[in-house]
Image (cartoon, rainbow, N blue to C red; front, side, top):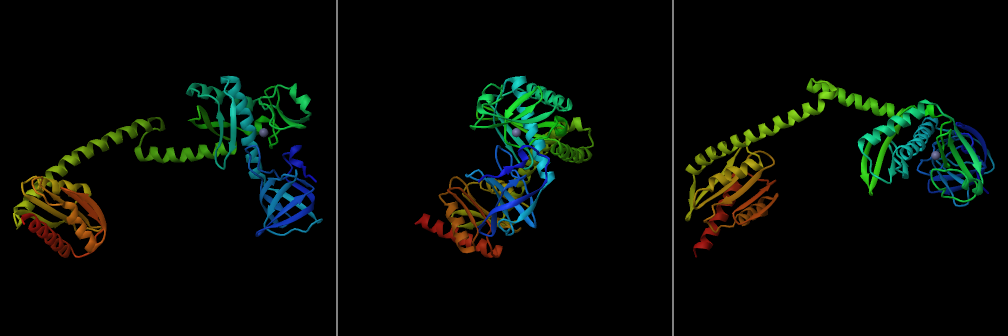
Length: 403
Ligand SMILES: [Zn+2]
């Protein structure tokens, strides 16, 4: 038993009648075998068709080992019944444009640059071919120009079937991967390939081919491309994003890169001057906090809640305070989430990490550090209670040290 593949000889056939040969239940779906079908099964880099069989929706189509084609449907069909199949044309035609475009693109890469196509993938928004060597930007532009020229010559794309020995005499672009009778796709006076996929009948129907991106891949090049309707949609999407950007920056599209560069430089300069101001502000506030330091044993301690500082600023502030000898600083921000920094001057043996850990143990949150500096965040509790706990831990440590 095998299924007659109607798409082999007519890729434009979207409606057909067939007899249901077999139906097998697969979980909540049914796998339907027909005597003939226009549905394309996933193969050769091209995805399956969708559509309907009678009232049932076709959700997957695949080649089976016995040569039949399986149609996965969402509703049970009766064996030996006649059924009308309808292939979703917009999806199929999109695949035909991309697939024919791939033949043309692969042939043109080989003609213009002698780069051979190693593999092809037809994706949902873009397709790729992998080439066996790297190419320069000007070579890629030349291929793009040449391949579109061939589209606009509107050459015939024909399907023929040949035996293996006939095929051996043909200048096929790639050695066929299968034995027996071969299906040959001929782009008139341009390319001959063995292929089981669906293609348009004239190159003009591909419309346009745009190489939308390239990247180095396995010692060669992966070229991403869009054909026909996809190229139009890609152009529209680019137009919208570029249009939005030029309106925001009030420049012409060609000036976008330099305008963005200018913005980035201005941003970096601003950040530098902000850092400088931040440091001066930290020194200033550190001096006023240090003036109200309390004594815990031999230690001068600044234990305070502050506001308006981010994590980085809080660290700068603490560092500026503990630049004084025999000083420890415990600072927490009053904003949510609460941030805490514990820092001490280099001449003290106090363990900042242990102070922070005792706070996290009592008030939650997380953080870490050791020796002279520790920081954390996400503590939950009254600032006053947290500061008292810090005070107690510093006092405990200084008593241990002085024993
Ligand atoms: Zn093909």
